[in-house]
Image 1: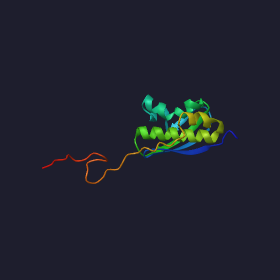
Image 2: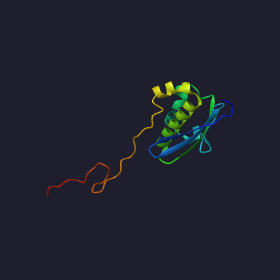
Image 3: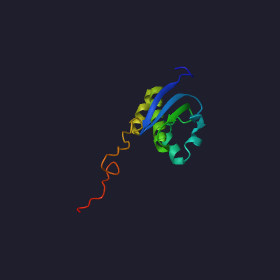
Image 4: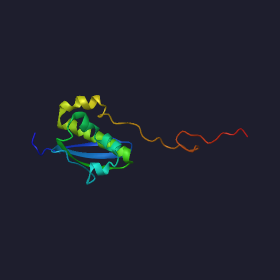
Length: 131
């Protein structure tokens, strides 16, 4: 493996899609041309997004350029996490075990259920009246 080798992967969560370009480096992470600390504006979001790097202890040895779109902030953080986990696995196959154990390689299938006709929401019914 050369130093400039780039590992590309895609992470998804709800309606968010994150495209991750990972390479060996010094720990510089950018999301949509902003530093990750600025893009993930709460500690909870940044912790969620960086879980794969913490689980594999690689936070200061890789650089990532991430492009994310769609969904909200939590969905985007989940998509970043999924994309980083997939890219780390491509970079080093020995990292698969800790990523799998932490449940970071599984795509979260939960998404918003569609609204049905004849009712106000996905599951809620209009109030029933006998007369």
